[in-house]
Image 1 (cartoon, rainbow, N blue to C red):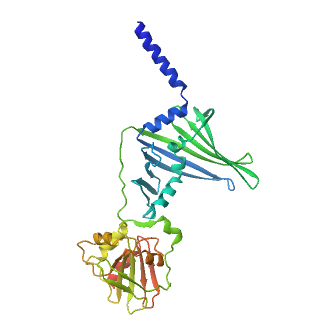
Image 2: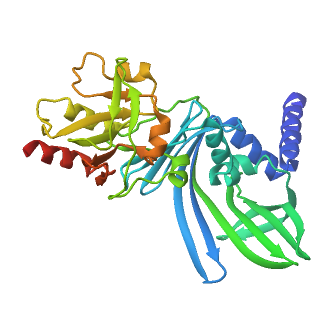
Image 3: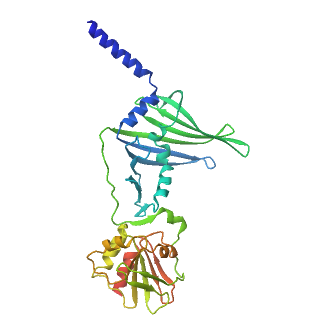
Length: 362
């Protein structure tokens, strides 16, 4: 009997000790014990000037949330994001385009400043928090914590930003608020609501599925490079093709020239390549085709065309010409006339292939 009472007493002490652990610590244990966490984020961004509020929802799955450089998969109505093995991809289904970073350093900076990395639950839990009170949300008690994220003076005014989190009874963050104050007066309050949590202890992996028929664009080039418009005069250039033969593009010659800019990593470039290598494609004798893989190495292009009969110049490793022609993504096709003037500019998934097929009919 004494032994049973002793066990009961011990269990009561353990329960009492657990009850004394702050909810913030219980939440940390729950999140960082898991190997995979899935949840839905609904964010509300009010505009104080118009009284309108922008709302967006995203489904997130975070892998190894303990890591500061955790991998993730995110999805909303029009796009998907993948971050795996230090590679980030955004698949925009409405544009039929895959976006990625050309420079890994730029990718790192962009990901670290993303909403997920800044305001996701696993990032928030790593901050220092002060308990404020217990408050009701939708009729349920939540533990309310705050954090002064920044406090600065600008043009004689005090600018302060506070973070607030609300932890539910099952030790998950159900709401996050970012409040900005000017001289103590509340300005904008951004609210994130987290729901539909799933915690998995089992170590799992995920695969990156990129569409095979989408175009490729680099983030860095979207602002720095612009596709050349029709009626633009272009310059001549010389290069070496992937077989080691010299290639010369003379902007003023008897034939019109198709300048096709492609990438070995672009799904739609592959579709275009398959077509122009097929027996269905017959180029007008009054035209010539030059295919440029400016951001790809000779080795990559050689592997790309292995065991394929190529009867037009294919030029690798020519980034300077890509910049000259404003190539911010792939594929892009220019039709240059005999006087070195662009008479057609095509850059979308649904423009280039129909244009080439129409040429074969003429």
